[in-house]
Length: 551
Image 1: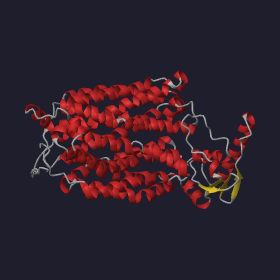
Image 2: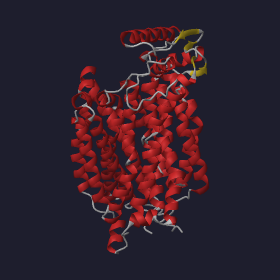
Image 3: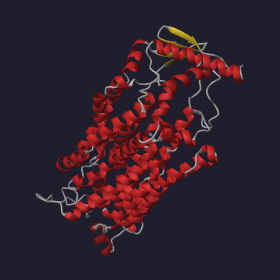
Image 4: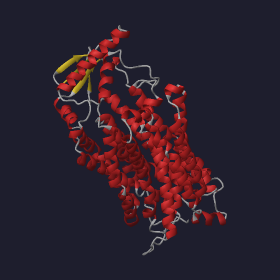
C-alpha cells in the first residue's frame, strides 16, 4: 500500500539542492559522453577494429559491440545497486564514474586490428562491457540521490535534470567529434583523429570526480542507516519476494521498455538512418542531430515539471502512443527531406530482386568470410543493401534485378574464381549502378538538396517523443520502490529496458532491414514494443507522483 505525501504549495530550491542537482547531472553528462562516443564513431571503430571482415559484417559487428555495453547494464545495476543500498549512494557512483572514464580513455590508445589482430576487437568488447557495468550502476545512483534530496511535489522537476544528461552527453560527444573533424583533414581523422574524443575523457573524469567529492550522502539514506533500517540483502528482498518482483515487472513492461525504444529511435536510430540509409554526409548528419537535441533538451525539464502537476503515467503513455502512430510517416518524410532524389527514385522506379529463395543468404556472416559474391541473389542483395536501396524479393528461377523497366541479369559465380570471378561481379555491379543512376537513385545525398530546416524539425519531433517518455521516468521509478531497496530495484528494470530493449535496437533494426530489403522495416521493432508498453501500462502501471518516498 502506497503512502501519500502532502505537496507543499510553495518551495524554492535551496543552494544545497541546486548543488546536488548540478553536481549529479554534470557527472552523469560526462558518463553518457563516454558511453556514446562509441555509437557516434561506429563507422571509424568498424574500420579500425573489424577490418578483418567484409564491410557489411564489420558494421554489424561494430553495432553489436556497441550493444554489448548495453547487454551488461542490468548486471551492473545488480552489482552496484546492491552496493548502493548497503554502503550508500555517493561512494557507489564515484566508483562507477572511475570505471567508465578509464575504460573510455583506454579505447583511445587501444591498437587496431592491423596491429594486434583478433586481440583488438576482443579488448574493445571487454572495455565496452566495463562501460556497460559502470553505467548500470551510475544512473540509478544519480536518480535516487537527486530524488532523495527533492521535496515532495518537486521530484519530477528535480530528477528531470538527470534525464537531460543522456541527451547532453550525446550532444557533447557529437560536438567534440565535429570540432575534431573540422580541425584536421578527413584522412588524418580517419587514421588517428577519431581517438582524440576518447582521450579527452581522462580530463572529464578528473573534473567529474572532483565535483562529486564535494557532495554528502543522501539524507534519506543517511537517516535510514542511522536507524539501522537498511537492507542486508537488497537483491533477495527486491527480486526474491513476489510483491517487489511484481512491481519490477510492471515498471519494466509498463513503462521502461517503451521508453527505451522511443529514446533510442529518436536519438540513435535516426542518426544511423541518416548516415547509412539516406547517405547523408556524416558531419552534416551529426550537426543536424545535435541541433535537434539542443532544441529538445529543455523539454525534459518541462515534462518532468508537468508530471508533478498531472502525473507521470499519462505523459509516458502519450509519448509511446505518438511514437507508435507516427514513426513510419516521420521516417518517410525524413527521406523526402534529407535525400529527395532517393525518395523520388523509389516511387518512379521500384527495385526488385528476382531469384530462387533457396539461393539467397541472410546478409550477415558471423565469421566474416562470406562476401556474398557467389550466388546471383546474394551478389545483388549485398550490393543493394550497401547502396541503401529498398527492394522486394520475387520468386523466380534465374536471378536478376529489375530497376523500373530495366532487367539486369545477376551473375552465377559458383563456377568462377580469382580474377574471373572478381571481374564478373564488378561488371554486374557497374551495370546495376548505372541502371540505378539512370532512374535517379543517388549514390549519396546531394548536400545542396538536403532540406536542413525540415530535417531538423522532423528530428525535433522524434526528440519530443523522447522527452515525453524519458523526462518523468526517473521520478516514477524512484517513487514506485521503497527506500531500503530503491537503488537495486529501480536500476534493474531501467537497465534491462534501456540496455536490452533499447540498446539492441540499432543492431536489430539494421538486421531486419537487411533481411527484408525495406529501408523502413526496422521501425517495426520500436513500434511493436511501444504499443505493448502502452497497452500494458494503461492497465497495470500505477500513478506515483503523490507517494512519500521516505516510506
